[in-house]
Length: 229
Image (cartoon, rainbow, N blue to C red; front, side, top):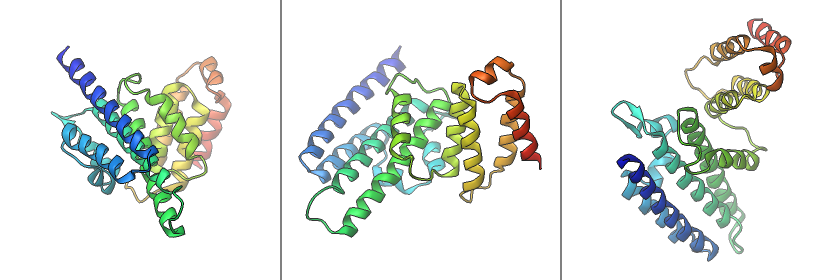
């Protein structure tokens, strides 16, 4: 009960801060809006936005480890703050009177943050976060729509593949695994073995489940054979 009340208080505080940031963003007070989010992050987690955005996603996730367990509900709160930060940068890019370079820089900063928030949402959902706490599934779909023209990092494609599998959308999971294989981002991870494990898990399902997931058994076998070749 105490843990639940503590989380709810944090959510209420975050909702209030995001509301203030939204008002400031609409008034084009972007620096003040960013400061509002940064101050909340410091109070709740002892971090700041600069730190979260400068570190690799895996290192940030480890910062939410407590007694050997990643506190995924806290992680998705951080994702929400970074998502809101992304929208502030996107708004800055639309301000009249700035140079083309400043506009491009703001767009890039916003996109980078949006993708990082997506990674944290997906990781949190894949590891047991409460999906209703911040409506994370809806936020994932919204961010995917906003970033559909861009290439996601391989590590994020991996999380997306696991998430789609969890949803029973096996055809989309397969697509994400193959994008992860194609993209790669220097991580010392053998995605090929993980894709093989994905197909092996699907092999154990009933034909009806595979059909509903958009990946009939023959396509599972074809994919596994192609991977082996």
